[in-house]
Every structure is written in structure tokens, then in C-alpha cells.
Image (cartoon, rainbow, N blue to C red; front, side, top):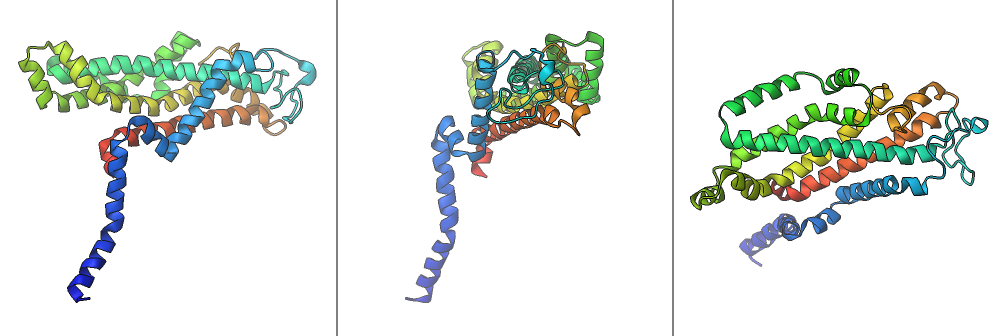
Length: 308
């Protein structure tokens, strides 16, 4: 074999990993969202965790062994044990921790979902209008969002809850009042980059109104990025809800919430650590699952990530 032929064979062999990698990316790009998500290990694991929590939250009234507020002082601070009446033990009032964790999942997921839906609806709507038309409205909203971003999120929500008082909807509105800013900035930037593309110009030439162009033409092309942002931010909202409930400013004490459960158990950390650690582990696992699912969706929906 000549030196030129040998050099060609070696060059093609060295390029094989890159060729295989490009072929794999091409196959993934041709898949639908569901097959791509199932082939993403982190996204698949996150989806399983989130679906498990959804199933627990929906079936909590049926599957929970006891009512979450049932008090039994004769069995207070019972440690977790397999095969006993209280699988995960009891708290300082004898309430079953497993039942309270299951009902607490309902609260945390409802707060996170409601906050994201309200924030996305408000932020995307205003962002699309500001990005499409620009002008005075865009400048006013830009200054207003900069003002909101100047306040730390937790401090802002603590101040709002101090005025409105504890409550489910008060907490949702307090979180949404600043949560829409990120959706606004993302939607505005995406609309500004899309509004001068050929398909938008073609819709204008056909005489379609601006509202139809925004909703039917531009929105479908930016919705994937909005879904990814909403999924990633839902974990943050759940952590914020738990933080405020821990401080006594979130969900009322009569409703089981993971943050208030952690607060109730912190004084027993040395003698009965399960009272605080088990709700904390439930919170950490849910947030981990949501973040893994969000990263998986980002990798599956973003063409740049697919090429990387």
C-alpha cells in the first residue's frame, strides 16, 4: 500500500468518531420530542420523578394513610420504621409525616404551576406586544422591569406577603408579580428577532392583522423556549413557596406545606431529625426532577444544543 493510500485510510479512520457523532445528532434532530426526551437520560429521569410526584399529589386524599391534620399526642415523635402504622414516623403533635408530605406535594405543585401559568401569560403577552410594536410602551416596560429586577426576589416577595398576609392566592400573586419579568424579557427578545423574518413579511403582504401574525405565526416559533423557561423556573417557585412557608408568610399553618413542616421540625433536629429532614428531602427530590426535566426539554427543543 502506498503512503498516500495509507494516509487516506488513517485520515478517514480519525474522522470516524466525528462522522458517527454527526450522524447521531442528525438522527436525534429527526425524532419527535417524545423519542428525543426518552433518549435523554437526565430528561427521562426528571420526567419519571415529576410524574411520580404528580401521581402522589393527585391521589393523596385516597392513598394517604391518615388525614394530614389528625393529632395523636400519645404517638408523638415516633421514629420511622417499616411495618409500623407510621412508615415515616410522626411529628411533635403525633401527625403522620407520610400523609403530610403527600398533601404537601399538592400545595407545592399547585403553587408552582399557578405561578408559572400566570407569570407566563402576563410576561409573554406584554413581551410580544412590546417586541412587535416597540415605541413608548416598550421603553416604559423596559424601565419598569429594570426597577423590579433591582429588588432581590425573596425580599420583594417577603415584603408583599407582609402586606397581603398568608394565603394560597396571596402567595401566588406575590410570586407572579415579579415572576413575569423573565418571561417578558425572553418573549420580547424572541419577537424582535422573529418579526422581520420572511414568513412574517409574507403574512403582512397577505393582509393578516398584527394580532393574527403574533398569535398564529410568531408564537408557535417561540413557544418551545417559553416552555423550557417555565419548566426551569417552576422549581424556583416551589423553593420560594417553601421558604415563605418556613418563615410563616406563605401557606397558612392549618394547611400542610413542606416549608412549615421543616420549620416545625427544626427544634427537634437533635432528638427527632426525621421531622424536618424528610420534608426537606421530598422538596429537594422534586426540585431536582423538575430541573432535570427542564434541562432535557432545553436540549431536545433547542437546535443549537442538538448540534453541540
